[in-house]
Length: 456
Image (cartoon, rainbow, N blue to C red; front, side, top):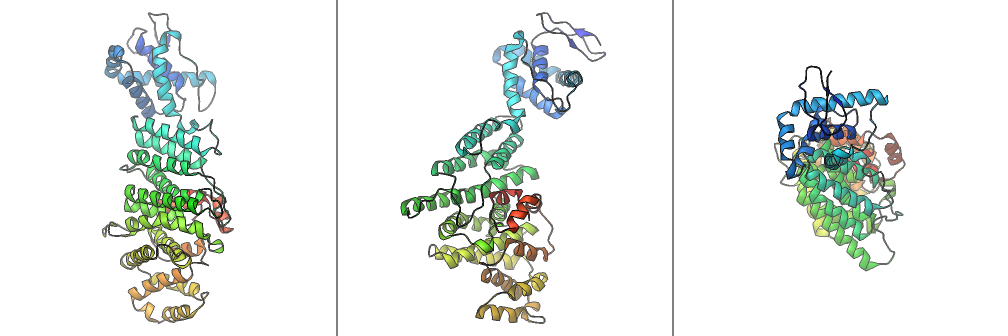
């Protein structure tokens, strides 16, 4: 291969065999500086994106350089890839190359490449930030989202930024004894991320991006539950309820019905029956979730849309949560009744509860009271529930409501399995973390569960 000799004292770059001899100018210096900033494992697709981003960011005075690169884009990409392979061989390091400063004559190009490199290394963008400083995490995420929206692949960059944030801001178990780790300003910062994340992630057909969006919506719904609570501070609790209602309204405004159901599934699947949330935590959950129920399970849910396992699970978990609120909260009785009616109507119109009858009988056997006795009579073999789909569906709702305070999330999940519905995106996300599954088995509600890291 013949070297391309630079006219400005630059380094020698080897060209591909048969390639034309070119002058060592701004183009070659830009390509060399870009190659030094990329890891050796960078794909052709990402090299192309980085090159285009660097070219677009060139100042107006570099118009000829921009035009030259655009005319010979394929050759420029090949030249970068060749330099990456050569650098990897020399460094003898798998997966990365040594990052060096560009030559003095490439200073202008280096500044452009620095911006591109920042976008291509998002996973390390939080490396200097502690998870104990949620405000700093949110500020960094805001900056990354703004940069993502100005990039060639906004959804990919935004998904990486949001995934990093949600990984950092996992929380301790939420229970009656939980201590908050957010203040009001942090919760407002969380709300401020929503429009940016929505602009970057919504409308994409990528399943991974959709899941991150669902996780973030669940994070918003549960953020008010992480507010620091002062015992006896009525004004502070009133402000917390207002924030919860604000975030719930925001999620209802931004989420599609499918996203709202995914968020509900992720947010409420970890409510353990052995440790029912206290009054203040339940109040915040109610104020946040009520606006979302209408979007997730109301008239916006298209009758033509197919149902997945996670849809039924989200509905039953939400019905259980509403039942807990109705029995434990003097607040919002009218709104809770409306939410209950919407959930029951969606259950009746969307799902067939008859395959669930064997498991419903087992759960009903553990319930107490006159209503439970009547329910068991309807559910018995050859009873009315086996003869009418409507009766079976109504009985399913009653099993969930009567057992709301004692049902473990795993019991509801096992009940859903009897329906034989196809597994969806959220189901797969909830089934990947064995450690979170063990935590849920102990009766804990982890944000890690609600953000998609817990077990089904």
